[in-house]
Amino acid sequence: MEYFHRFRQQLLSRLVLIILLENILVGVTWWGVTTYIELGGTETAALVGTATIVYAILIASVSAMWLTQPTKLIARAIMHVTPETAAKVEAPDPTTPAFGRELVSGLIHEVFELATTAEKTHQTITHTSDLRTNFVANSLPLPLLIFDANETILFANEVAGSYIGMPSTEMIGKSVYTVLDMLFPSEDTLDTWLADKKTKNATASSTWDRIKLNPAEGRPSRSFDLAAYYNRDNPDKFETMLVLFDHTKAYSQDDQAISFIALSVHELRTPLTLLRGYIEAFEEEFAGKLTADMNDFMFKMSATAQQLTAFVNNILNVARIDDDQLVLQLHEEQWGEVIRAAANNLALRAKVRGITIEYSIAPNLPTVGADRVSVLEVINNLVDNAIKYSGDSSRIIINTYLTANNLVETTVQDFGVGIPQNVLPNLFTKFYRDHHNRAQIGGTGLGLYLCKAIVHAHGGTVWVKSNKGEGSTFGFTLVPFANLNDEMRDSVNQDITRGAHGWIKNHSLYRR
Image 1 (spheres, rainbow, N blue to C red):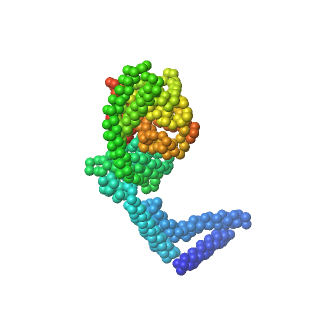
Image 2: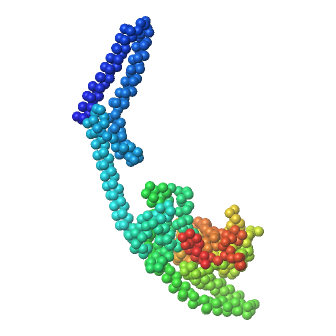
Image 3: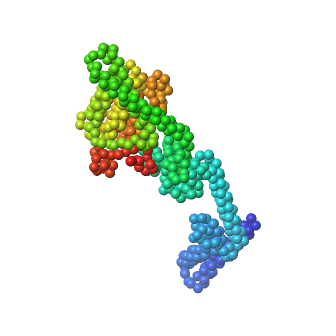
């Protein structure tokens, strides 16, 4: 404050001098005009007034430059320590002002001290924040990866390195798809999700179940659930964060269970084939010779053999799907003919339960790209479910038509027990059974899982609508053969080869 009082006294004395100087100049001008120039009173006053204005402007201009010099130096000091202007403004010389030198020097020194303290505080806060971030990330007992808008990894915690089999420091700077060679169970993959969110959302999150990590040389095989968080325009370039939830042991047990069951069921194929052959031979040999009761027995034996065959096929196909060994050949098919053949084949199975299968086929349906054997499995499973859950209803309706999106859609509708709304999201999950009626109605929980995998491999979608007590409608779509991508067709056979599992490898459908 002492510097400020001294500065105020210096400023006051200079203002007094300036005012006195202007008054002296005005007085001298008045004296000179009245002494040496003979003018009237009005002219003399006008001339002196004009001179007074000129003196005021000149003295004020010079005084403003002189009196504001200390303020200018302080302003330069502030701009010099401001990050946005530091490179453009040089540090001021505090010895240059004619007055207020002590105050200017003291204030400039304080400005520099404050700037230094602020910088040290910022560095301390930043360092502390980094330490906390690294501590939290590396203490997280789950693999964590963060990458930028180009999918380049910026951070990976130590757990991620141990889990993936690569030191976390080596992941930095690599593409996430190089480090994580992930196999997804549908076309909803990480990269397709990111591509969609980058054009539509500022922030988003999503999860995926049963992801497989394709093991590289020397790295372990892993199965996990994946969670992702996307944040566009993050100031630290941390655009996407991935967290992996390991389920290798549980999912491997599921796979081993399917493999064991498939191995066991495979042994049933030979006796089952013989059984069906004998039944068909008996039906032909004894046609018209059996009593009504014997005919009914033969009828039920044939239907049961068909049902057992479907069960065996389901188990074996699910095992092939899990091992990515079920290969589909998509040929050009007349869909109406496929539906008629399927309905006729299933009529016997339905008749045993007193159910009639009706079907409606829209005229002029386009041909579809389908693997006939596999797509018949889809229809068989949907109709078989409709038969099981029809309750007291005696009708099942198969309906097929062309949608507004130019897809061939097929629905299987029953009027039975229906499905509660809270169960619907899990219906197409492997091994899932509705707990409300699984004790009363048999099944493996694999049929709808198989349907979804096969339909997705065909490029279609599968859906369900139902309410408890109101029956259910299952539907799926197939792509018209003419709309399938030209590059996917075999130039010789005019068909398409696909892996039925629908595993997606990073960016594209895994095709054989």
